[in-house]
Image (cartoon, rainbow, N blue to C red):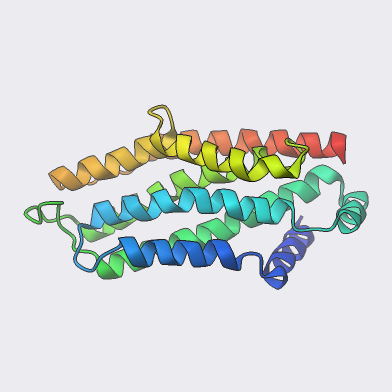
Length: 222
């Protein structure tokens, strides 16, 4: 598995297909994270932007190989393991963006409530912000895994379905991402920090289930 991960990571880096989602996320942060803004609001904003970027990055990773190269890798290591390596590579890239986004917010934001009257502890806020980012990127990866091959056989459907699903995950009440973001916004109003542990656990389970489904289908349809 380690060799597959190295191969997929090298393939992603050399393809330069990671540049568009990274540039979009960097622009999203540069526009929306203001110097001196409330720290919890900024963490919520950064995490929300990470969800569609994770969908995009997952699509890049699972569609990066030419069919002939994918067949060779699948023959050597089984289709399911190859697809799992693709999804794990996407998670690794999204986690790296989450860490960079969290550091960016920590450097620029004001550790106070949204009205700038209540002090917010920086370290707990940073932990909650990072956990919120992870809670958003995991459903994004799950969406990317389910909205591309082998689940969707027609490549043209992947982009619109993925975008609609990302939007729904951000706004629907039952979504772990929505729950984590709501907690950050509410915490910013009152100046309290609550780490989204339960939404993160739910997002982790959803992501694991979606990845397992996609890997199982890749073995059948490979």
